Amino acid sequence: MDKGRDRYLVAYDICEPRRLARVHRYLNGYKVGGQKSVYEVWATPAEIATIITTLRKLIDAEVDRVHLFRLDPRMSMHAYGIPVESFPSYFVVA
Picture: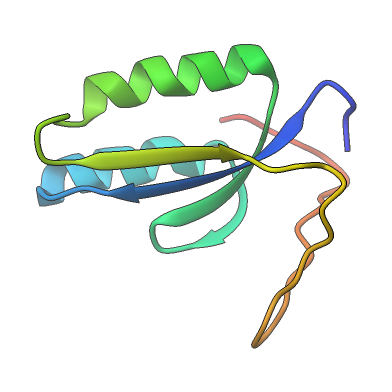
């Protein structure tokens, strides 16, 4: 993957259905893998800053939660069930 990008895990728990739909739609533009409310995202530091700024506007910080974890690039992936390696040959931010 692009050396300027890092892999992040983004997990969210949004209490209200409209906010949940907005956060889900927004993060779909960045995700390269994931399920339901946990996504894998390849992003530059500038993109992460934009994601954080936007998510702060979309959520209600009193009741919603969003976690962003930067994953160590030296980590190997361990998947159980039907593993899917999410290393696309291209990257598009919609």
